[in-house]
Length: 214
Image (cartoon, rainbow, N blue to C red; front, side, top):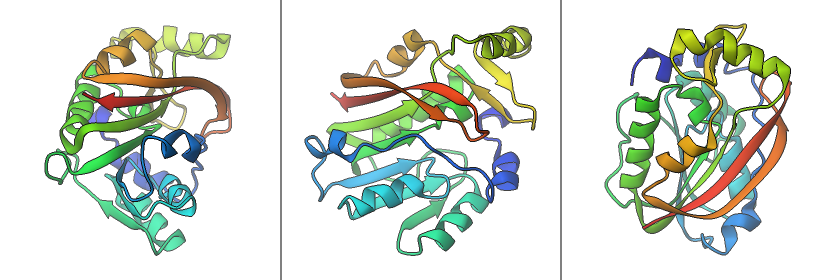
């Protein structure tokens, strides 16, 4: 991944202060992912999602993140969780290792097509046949504020929806056609929309998709 796709210095610098809010729906998982399943939370941040899954009865959960400070915070908050700092290359797991993978507000932090394609390819590798990806992220927003940002940065980054926040982080909102292309090796079995407060306190629309590996 290039520097845009792995802004470790930024995430380390804000690890103590950011709050992540994408809602975890254990009821969405329960029918497809039994409690005994092995689950990977890829881009786990400070472990919030892992903790919520553990609270709902899942026990075999591994969280990984490229930000050492996010992992440090997570281990302090949730010392019973398995949270691991990893490098920015491929995932350090064998093929077909997991029954499910959680990918919450991670694609937004990987702005390039190339970086996102590489990430989804790695998840496809480590998730078993018939296993699932539970994905939550941001579509293109329709409000004036975001459209002004898209307009301002489209020429800079070469894609509509990629923009730089005031604090320097580069993020991405997505055309849904691109998300479906990314997931072309999976079958989408459930799709919902909602609204959250972003890590900077702004209201934003999200999509949540459960997709099964063929």
